[in-house]
Structures are given as structure tokens and as C-alpha cells.
Image (cartoon, rainbow, N blue to C red; front, side, top):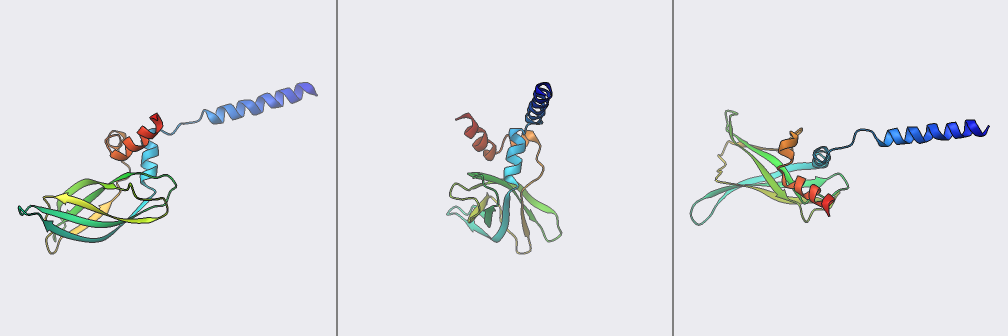
Length: 151
């Protein structure tokens, strides 16, 4: 009886050890997952000019983190399309979410210096998914998460 008990215990330990050794989530995969837990809703757009006449497109966004982990930064892709559908501008913009809390909405602005919105232009904002690991490593949110693991 003792032999069967020991053998059963050894099998349980082996199963637990194997399940703990499964595929690990890479930092890039973790950041991609955390990014995709955000909901982005465009609220409005406007073009402002500074004293020298330089334009800046401002896109107001409502951002809600549907997850439980706070990201101080979130990078989105903003595109401006002309009336014929051609892409006039496509840029990644990093949003400052330092004041955001998971589960609570926050209104922030994406700023695109040098961009003027035409009367019939359309603006879209998206979280790119998937992004290649090499691109994810360049995002401020990757540095936020990677830095948290080195402290």
C-alpha cells in the first residue's frame, strides 16, 4: 500500500512540475495583451495653430482600461484619410495614461504636430494588433512593464 501511495505522490509531483514548465509568456506577449485590454473611443477632432502658424491635429479620446494592470502609456495608430479614402497621415502616438485607473474612463488627447484636418477628412484611431515583437520593444509601454520587472 505504501509503495502505491508513494508512486501516486510521485506522479502528482511530476504532473505539477510539467505544468509549471509550460510555455512562458514573453514580455512582448504580456505587453500586447495589456494593450488590448484598453478600449479607445474617439470623442472629437480639431486643428489648432500656434503663434507661428504651425498646425497640430488634436484627437480627443476616451480610454478605458478593461484589465487590472495600469499602463502609464499606450501607443495608438492615428490615420487621417482624405475624402477619396487615401491615407494622408498615419502615425503612432503615445498617450499619457499616468492618471488612469483600471476600470475608469479617462479623456486624453492624441496630438499630431504638422497635421491639418481638412473639412471632409476622416480620422481613425486603433490599437494595432498584432505588432511584431521588435516594434513592441520600441513602445513606451514596453519600457513601463519591463522596468517594473527589473525593480
